[in-house]
Image (cartoon, rainbow, N blue to C red; front, top):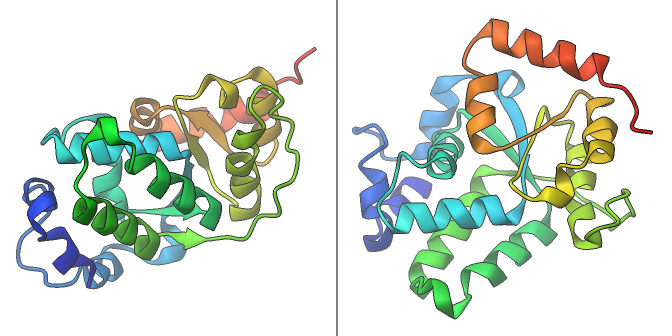
Length: 201
């Protein structure tokens, strides 16, 4: 079970930021809200990598670690492709990060079990600066998400923002996501800005 995975030695510090008294995080998620009511998000693999590093280093208040907490609690729906999961697992094994193998397995397993996995075809979505990033845009399109959370400049261009805005999806950092979802007024303002976004020249 996911909750048991969170109790592993390497995620012990993070688990203390979650509420006590629940044996199964999936049961907790069902108690919080229905799937249809949850905010749907996509993150690139680097944002998830950042979350893993912050959790492992014991920084639960870092923006990406807070985002991971929301995913684990079932407060938002993370939408991913299998390609993202493979890329994430690969990056987590980079020797300079020094992440233990069991931590990597547990982290990726938790993400995979918590996420809504959608199929993508590897289409050219217009991210010419880094074609590998097209998969995150395609996932956002296919997954009908409200937010693409990234720190990658290739995914923050005016054209990418415009293309996703037409589908009601905002490109934001983790910190901007928390600000945009802090109140009903903030969400309304964000949606209005997406509708008013003009096509880049």
